[in-house]
Length: 319
Ligand code: GLU
Image (cartoon, rainbow, N blue to C red; front, side):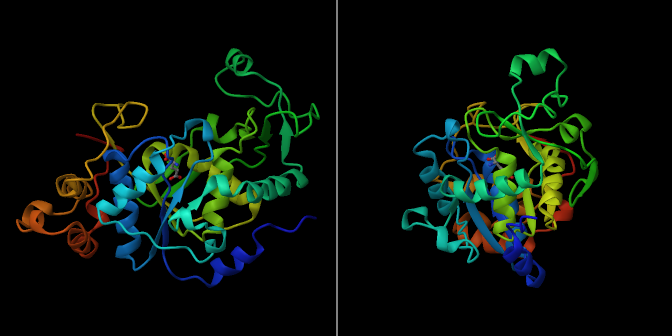
């Protein structure tokens, strides 16, 4: 049997008692108000628990990367006073130009190692279905290629969902029934264009960084079940998941790069910072002096006063 690629990390996790959170933006555009809200939520969660907070650049899908976005995102976090910690677990992989942030495109060999581990467990198989064929056979893929013995090298690669996760607990939204179509589908681990999937990369990264709490937007909540089943295959205890409401302009219209959400204003950060904190349930309006504080003073105040029980319970906040 191939040894687990996570042996050292499992040891680390067992002895670790500190909260370790992260913000994991995809550099497909500058930070907008919705991503600022998610960044702040994870930052405050980590810092209010005396934890560490990392920023990880999720550029695995190189087809969506915009060259200048990485720097724009880091500049924005910095302007809003959110300073990130450097993870000693993965620090040796950082180049000087990484600004202390783990970057997925630097970790392809690591993903390959974890991919090989799954392949050796006979969890993976090549698939020759086109998107069109899958659509024609129903909305999700039904395992047509499981027994065809197609090679992993020349095909998109799927993972067998032998023990899908059908429900899980979210720290904010409570018991979640995972959408069956998503959880049971043998989803792609390696894409047709040869890129590793977000699912594989995000789970490997969260394990390697010893993340204890994944705090992120509820738009990703349905995918959590797939990620949990991957933790199961890797035989690693999963972190806790804490999803935040997403910010929308109208019902179902989440602020996103695809919807051309405007970039946050890094030259005048305080109004948007205070607004985001208010939407995280902080009593901003009770403190008239806050608008005169610097961003890092505002954040210090927020770390002291944040109470996640006051976080809105809807999955979407319309602004
Ligand atoms: N990279 C993802 C995004 O920008 C976030 C993934 C995550 O937080 O797990 O939407």
